Length: 155
Ligand SMILES: CC(C)(COP(=O)(O)OP(=O)(O)OC[C@H]1O[C@@H](n2cnc3c(N)ncnc32)[C@H](O)[C@@H]1OP(=O)(O)O)[C@@H](O)C(=O)NCCC(=O)NCCS
Image (cartoon, rainbow, N blue to C red):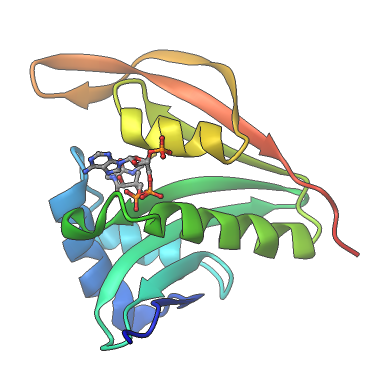
């Protein structure tokens, strides 16, 4: 039986593999320096999903300010998408944030990113508004959809 991938905090040694997933998965990929700035900002800013053989399958980068957090980036390697890894990462993050007293998780997503929006809605995120023409895409620009999810305090 194959061992299930595990989720753990990301660290400096993961940055290259994260940037590599991002390059293959995202339309406007973050640069390595964006990962450096955002993922290692503090010890609680990044989660990675790691297969039993050590291969990185995905990651989530977030920022907490007082009782509010923002999901800055999430990606799963293209060959691994549609298998529930994104949902697993996000559920883990929601639990982790609730445990540290965060009350709300915010995010922005490109309006045409249907698989991401479908995942967020399934996990209880609601629409808060739009930022017109926010994302550059091949051949033009697309609105950003602003979404959020309230968290229950876990004591
Ligand atoms: C968004 C993302 C992280 C989701 O990860 P994932 O592992 O595919 O997520 P899941 O398997 O849990 O499911 C996500 C949803 O997309 C669907 N989906 C994902 N990949 C798919 C594919 N290749 N074909 C068909 N459906 C797909 C799933 O069926 C699921 O739909 P549902 O919620 O209606 O059941 C991943 O698609 C990704 O890395 N995208 C590129 C980066 C990106 O856009 N990040 C979001 C930034 S806001």
